[in-house]
Length: 97
Image (cartoon, rainbow, N blue to C red; front, side, top):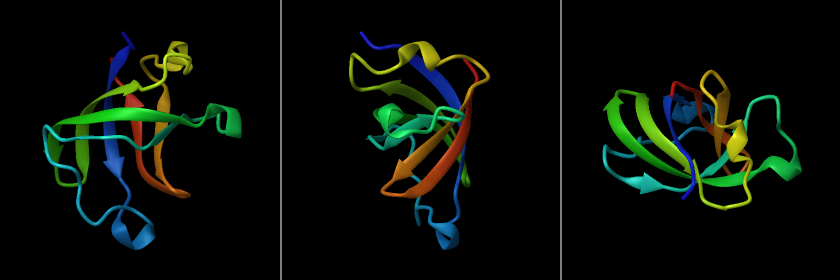
């Protein structure tokens, strides 16, 4: 089983490349996730994101990598993450636990 963490996300506004609507509580989606400071082609991994709470453009989400060989050891409290759709950063967050 892949390690899951809780991430507090701030979602990028639509006018700067973000999503028009935030996924509702309880809905899963699978963007590309990158640990900040580790951005290179070898560290682009699909993530499983489940929004646990939604308050405007901020969410508390359960996040895990989909692939077994992803860098699960990087999912540590305090690390910052980016979610991408295509080349757009759609959310920035911090792992809280």
